[in-house]
Image (cartoon, rainbow, N blue to C red; front, side, top):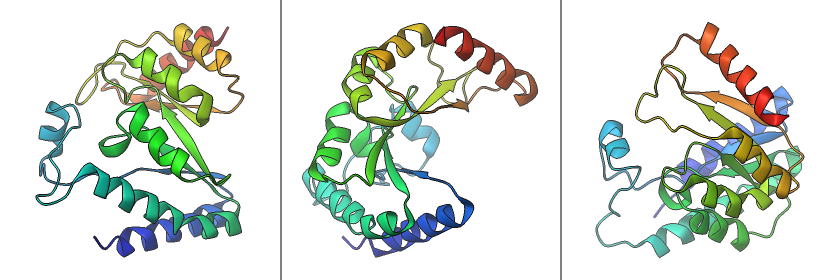
Length: 195
């Protein structure tokens, strides 16, 4: 598989992050693309079939090789690449950590998204939290576009404390409520949960 286009794009984004003074950039493992509609992908909980003739092991190799080709530019620019628990190969803690552990570089971290483990989220968050470089706290005021999770943020912050997480927590608001009120409510809830 030729991943040059994605590698070039990632290197360009690293350079942009450097120019803007952004120290950490989200990285995804990608997906097969065999499900054409994103709505259908979400109905199937982010799971899709491999391209015929290929396996997940092939995809892990492509992903690991691709990330490794971006690390020199990340180091040169001082930009941490944070691999997110997202759809595809990183939809499970095991998949995310398989990639992370295959690349022993200080320029590859983990972005822990609290809303991307759809089943048994707390057990999965506990597995990934010790590796987290950055955390996105997802909220769904007004209901989510494709799904909503009723996350217990006191419990999540306890998981992060137990893992000795000391980094930033950013809000990722995915609710249908107007941002003017939904974001404010989310920030207030997160501040209360941190106490």
